[in-house]
Image 1 (spheres, rainbow, N blue to C red):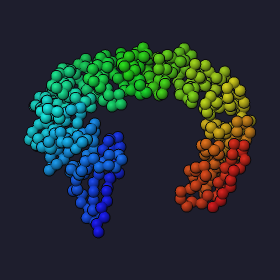
Image 2: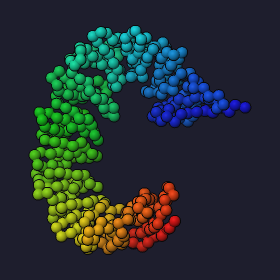
Image 3: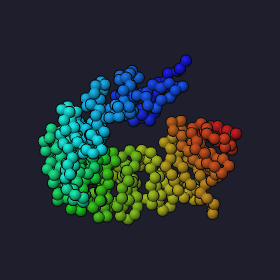
Image 4: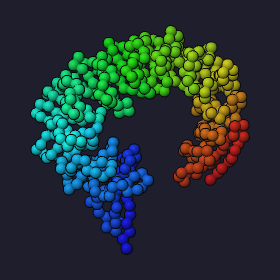
Length: 435
């Protein structure tokens, strides 16, 4: 007896994760047929459309490209054919429009799936194309490299005359289309085709966390999603927003900029800024020393450091002239370990990882707790891994191979583990495994 299998290819399913319907195909495992038709199932695996499509095309915005008898059309999510499959080529639906081609000798046209009529047809001197903004059709005229662009709506109404030099990047998440005017200035259209920003900038760089850098007359600033300038266009250099902060630089001064356009460190002589944990910043002053600064712009360390490493939250390690110090709030402690050469970020379980120089030997690993007591000091063959949640630290050594270890220290291959040891928060050895 033939066994029927319902096959939903993983690749097809992955492409359709964000769609309502997923292509499926019924196959006889004993008589596999690649030409079998494709149907569509809901995400609960209920069959919605029986096999009809010759290709496993996926739904987009409620429509799918249907191939039937070698020709293409459009089908909706109920299985109704809204554009008969009579075309040699057919694009996905954008709004109510598709780009189609009748045969190899014909030109491409834009057809409305509502009226079933062409709203624009390519000519020798005019080329039409769908844009990512629904129901907006791009018009291109002229010859390379002097093309001119315009826009029209699906009903044939002209939106922008063909006087624009470029229609650049589309920002899908925001639904914005970048447009360059005849004088070289850039603006941006919103998802309805209206101007979000009139063409006035030398460049618009794209949005990050709701803000975009813009350039005008050699200076930079930021705009928000409404097109409003949240900072003056005055900076020599800017860096994209990350969460609630962007970065700007004027001359040798650098500082953070918040979502209101407020400069956090203006006038303090900082020449670089890096975002740390918990809204703290590691900033470099004009004298080359570093400060750990909170979001009010107040430095937590009164003495400039040669190096600062964030531990967690508002705690950090800094390198001063006479050694390494930890600071938690206003409490400062010196790390009383000889010949410290480097301090790395610690786990949030209360340990610091440090490296110690012993003569001409390589740096030796050591771990100290928040009370600055050395918990272990092993040889260079050992590697540090901070455990998450349980407060465990693994020290792993193999025959010239460092293992990637989890909390329980399970190795994937057959390489022998010589020693696996764990420390709890008090520095007590948790286990000792050999195999």
